Image 1 (cartoon, rainbow, N blue to C red):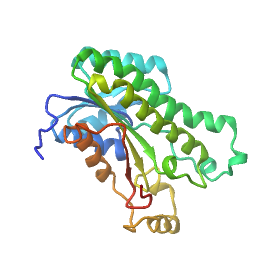
Image 2: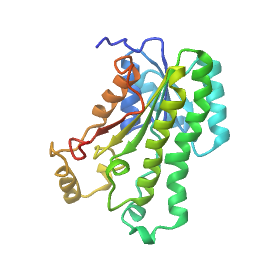
Image 3: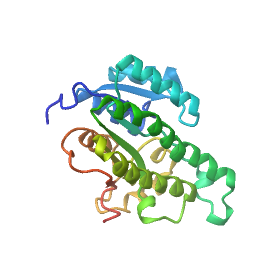
Length: 252
């Protein structure tokens, strides 16, 4: 694939300061896109952007005003938004993750949904008119997880939020397909990020690695390559899809 396959396209990546978001932003930039690496902490965004060689943006997806201001500014500065990667998510919280379903509180569910689901909704809602008005279409990629597809026995608030993202992707694909806007969900399994791998003990890590056919953890770089391929023209006649990236644990 040409290293400039995304040349001329403007990409927004949330949660881009580390892990999956950083790798996605890096890969998009390497393929020629003009990337805006975003975080709610502008200093962190600037530090990541410096490493990547791209622009930095400040946006808090849990605040509608922040989202509106960011998109308005991005459009003014870059003139367009062609690619949106909704990666920002609520941090892994063991105390919530390991609770039984009947012990989960309203506040715990609301906290996760407000960032993972409503945050994805807020930014997507703000970016869609920019893509439609530009007349060129665009690509929206949102991060979900395998429990949203296959279910799980833990992390109920996360499963609820991530399942909503799958439904949102399908809706966007159908409603905005005539505008040449494609939408995808990435359902991730065990990816070795600080938020997951780093939060586990060695015994938990080894057990998790045995859950898939490849018997290992995935790497953020592997997720980034899938995202970058979707963002280009290789998937020009595919939309609404949920792509499972989990080493063969959930087989559809």
